[in-house]
Length: 113
Length: 116
Figure (cartoon, each protein chain N blue to C red):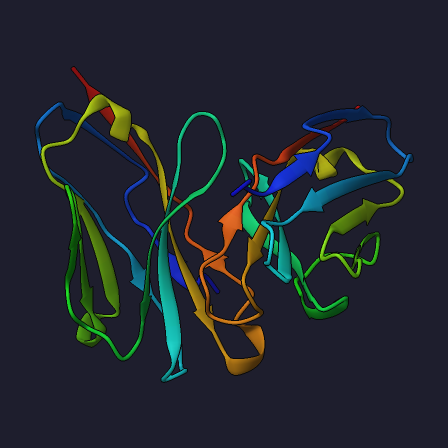
């Protein structure tokens, strides 16, 4: 079974631009969560989607948004990029929304200059 | 407030030594889940184990073992006879609250360095 895939793997953007990251969950998984990982803040939860609905949201500004499609694929968008948005963005999928273990993708390394 | 504390920033051992990683969590919920993940240099988080709050049985999987103690709010992880391939950052995580199961709260991680 293929794992969680994320595209692109690396991205360089300029301050003020916007970016869209994509995540394809493991086949059959319906829940997708997004996390931001930085050296200073560690791993922080961004949001979770299940059946195209956002179920949980972390403490991030409104510039961070996401959505989930009917095939469970998910995208996250960051508008008006700031230098502090440079991070590894990790997507995780699980069978259903709940206490099931989450399986992570390789991440998208975003650099904002 | 930090919900999951991993006090050890880095642990260095020589191959074949045992290493124990500490994890202390904080929650008011009676039902919660605890996880351990491994992040090798490649960056991808690898799921290791999930425990629910009602199951305090220790678990062993090969060279890995976990000790869950609700009385001390700890969920410690031991690697027996460490190998170079065990070098990675290990994260402990908590999932709590009926409406927040999909939200994992991670500790800061412990870097394990195993030298030959």
